[in-house]
Length: 167
Length: 167
Image (cartoon, rainbow over all chains, first blue to last red; front, top):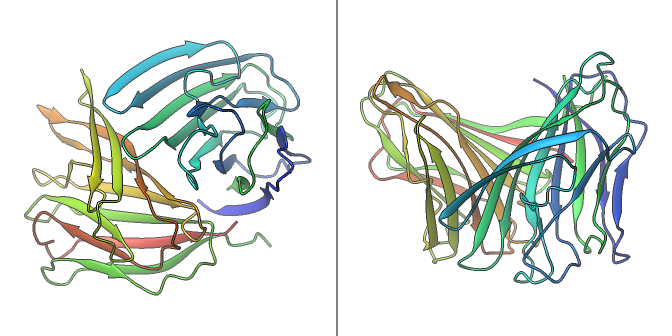
């Protein structure tokens, strides 16, 4: 397995509400998107919308997550990750960003529906933490050439996302 | 020519029993570090792994681990620890296993997140599990050294690889 770096988006102080990779080459097998982010929402944890080729339709997902010592499971038919909540909001301790990665499998195929995974960690404070694992499907056979992560309140400065192709 | 973005930084294979394995002088030129610990089948003793960064022995490590035994789930929630410990054993009953740690944004001024997976954990017909979890080091210093210890000495044959991911 070989990784090739496609690009990195480093967030400045402008609180962008979306982070987008466009014109993704379709010459590899999988995509890995690694993130470190924190939103401007005044909460501990926050949702992120996962958008492929500009589309928010056709998503299904199932999540397993834990908050401190309790575990939860749910399924959704949207792309909001409302239960997994893979982002730190702005009420967490300073310098704490949530981290994780999306894996998008066979993204260049034009014949298969697209499956993806998300693993993430949120550090709320010194005693509270949250981790989540989601598997999802985008009910579309188009090759993926654009990936967007969005949040209505914006991403805080020093957030960053990096996209890789995997051969 | 594809850019090489997943590079081996250092590796160690123990030729005799040892209490610890150290990686020092880690450069800050990567986005993430990946630490892989392989416990071969021919080792005698199981061992619980501990990770420590920059020789920091203060109570600044937290972790949250999810376990599946095949029929039930559980969590281990640890905070104010002096090291990261998944709380489960690497290598048992003569079975091989691999621990994979992703140490994210290790060179930034953010607090540090670690995602970990126990890649293989099928011990025997009556005892098996898989785990996934997250950890946090509440420190904004760049990680320049990693110390791996355990609840007992490591046997000769234990393999550890440290990789860097550009981005």
